[in-house]
Length: 98
Image 1 (cartoon, rainbow, N blue to C red):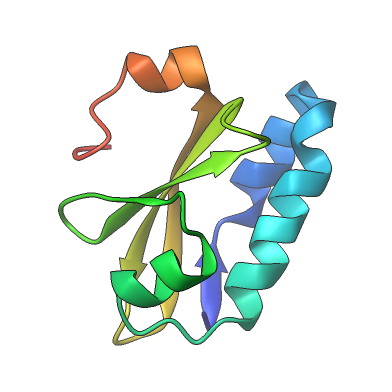
Image 2: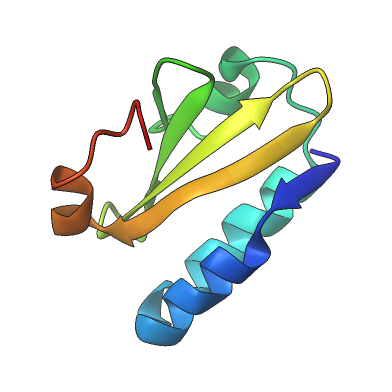
């Protein structure tokens, strides 16, 4: 992806949950260097990712301890961090609308 908006959301999260830091940094580096053109490409890299409506993808972080929702614009090669949280926080949101 050409651009990931915003790494600050990831940083803020790993400051609250330090055990997530290396996992989120790894996800960021993989996403940044990827040339994904579709959700299928993402699934080839992250088999456990869940494809949602409206170009959103849910990633399991640290063995499903945390969830990351990213909205993709494949044409512009942008990824927008929409949510990063614990599994219980994820259960309280609508992943298709956030």
